[in-house]
Image (cartoon, rainbow, N blue to C red; front, side, top):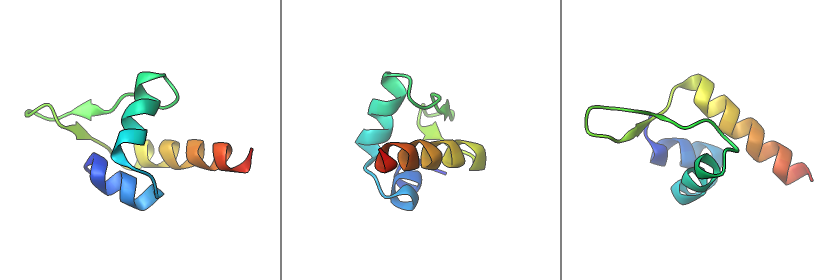
Length: 57
């Protein structure tokens, strides 16, 4: 999945995901041959779980 697809599923912006990666809140994404971020189901779950923890607080 692309960063845009993950962001839409989770309900946040792609910039938010990039920010969380930079500060170490979520694991950095793998990259494809173009250097674009790619995410799998595990990445999606971890981003979704992190978002839920901050929205609860």
